[in-house]
Length: 389
Ligand code: SF4
Image (cartoon, rainbow, N blue to C red; front, side, top):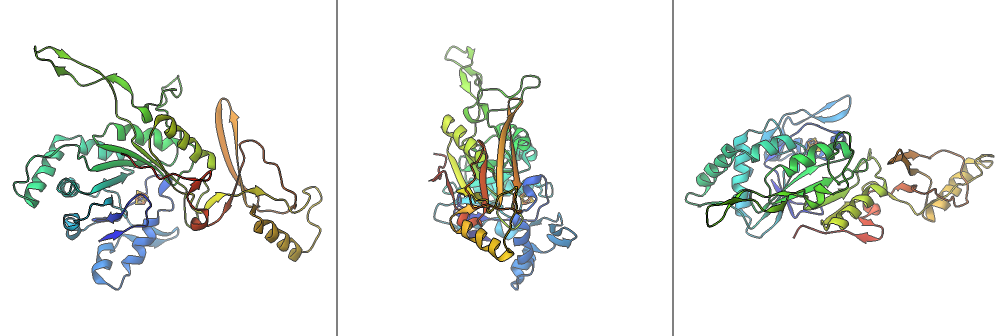
């Protein structure tokens, strides 16, 4: 089934695969599980069959079963869409999941090759399989076979496909260090990052060199300088030109939504925004998610003395401070330690309160639970909606 989407950076989703399992902390509150669970019980038998067996109820609530449904009837949907679209591929699974056969993935790429009017956004957490598959000649030949089956005599095609953007999800530095190098080694016309849910600070400067730390040159955003491919001149002499290696072409940042959402420190988003601006890489701020910045913190009594009034008076005092835009829920701190900036988010939802405005130490951010809609999409008063050219 293809649907128009509320995802801010796509026009449509195309989901020929349903079902997944979790691979890293960014998956902890995967929204696709509850979507799949609801559709498993859809009264329309065609919809419920597409989702059948993909979720289960257990002691953790609702989880994926690991079953992956391959929906052949959805494979050719984009061939029928006349109007050019930005299509997010597989919003309810991962295209490079181990249970998806190479042949099926090749079929997806064949359809994308035959519809250059659409731009496809493929996002994965299975970076290793994406890299090995898309770098393999056998796989490209498989894509070609499927093209011929779908449209005999369709002619040559370019690889990597110019209308396919490949991305990896990275939620913190650990997964950035693992997934970004794999993405840069994968043939792609456009490479992008989805830092959502952003669960920690990420430095996009490049990989850590053992014993020497993180380099100052931003290889991931600017490309690593080096020698280009070997070429031959008119006289048959082989030479190489200086070239810049692959780089990230687009970065998306977003906080987590949903009842169990984890808060994103505003400095994590700001740092990525500033690194992208420095390197001229388009930056897209998708959302704050459940938690967003609060204007200031209010205490409703002296911490040394404690609250002396009634519970009703306390509730009124809290309500009054909240009505004025204050928070008393979360603060986030950051501090330099051994040359590195460390971050903390901690809850201060306890008594006592004070009605005085509290000065915040440097690096501290006041955050509160607004709900996704109210938290909005502005970062320091600005909407960031940039796309790759
Ligand atoms: S990879 Fe994506 S679809 Fe799969 S569990 Fe993680 S967040 Fe959900």
